[in-house]
Image: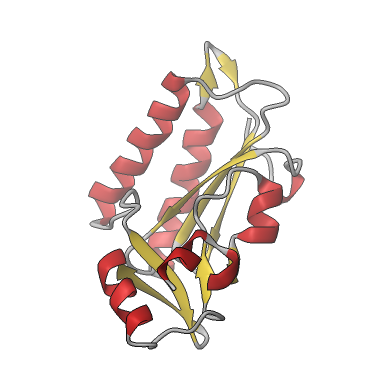
Length: 160
């Protein structure tokens, strides 16, 4: 069952998929119904899952699942990964590569391979206060509080 992401409880589990580029408005018009269709059919052992999504900065796909009704299983998580892989192929975009960093550069969202970002830190091209996106958050509450934070408040602080 698809619900508005805002309606999901803070305890909901989240998965964040960052794109290596922004999606165009035309792509987003196609992608949003595809995500809704996937979530509408997303099940665990035949039981519908209560899920929602949002897309932020035309670049991040956030899936949320209210696990108070049913927990995601290995098979349902695999199904979501296969769905994301199908988006990758169709739109020629990377969504599953976790070895990249997204961060704010002024009002824009920049995307760099981790090694390049490490070099930027070393060269002081980014500061400890640079806003980074911590895609390792697990719940909607963590997503709201700790997703978009200064580097010092994220796992990225290890690079300082």
